[in-house]
Length: 247
Image (tube, rainbow, N blue to C red):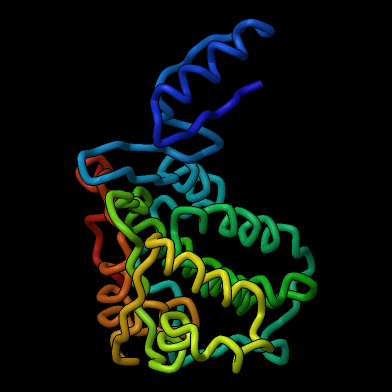
């Protein structure tokens, strides 16, 4: 059994390990580097987590290591539908790809919307749905090691395009007017006043959450994900995997 210990205090971690060692035979593997397909890299500004090995294995298993690249996972002009295309005789391949893509979204928020769209057709996928899944694989191939960076040195900045939502979170005067709001919305206000997050108003056209809710053309898509803390530390080590021209 592998046990992960995480704390802001090194002393706390050492105390827990000491207590565990009194009852169990332990082997200290040191700082976390790789766990369940996730690779962890540390630097002065924080940590970065990626799933490059998992992504490369996915491309190998599906035969997409030599596929042409694309730089956005969805096609803005095409909305997936249940009423077009030929139904697949065997949908196991489609389901397997979508399942693996879901696990990849742990460190790849840039494919969250595409994967969510694909998951709506798991019961009766068509050849067009499979083509859409293949496009996501071609997008992943462009940067299989693209890392989710976490800067934990200060409060998390959250940008919202609704001034009223920001006001509700910041001003307790509005609290009584919003009893119908779900518990998670009130949780945001609690974290805000604890200093764990900061809210900033931003224009709708600059809302970084857009790639999670709609399709984008490559230029705007790359602009958005470049602001999401995604980095590709493995780019020089891809062996030419990201040097092809996009179709």
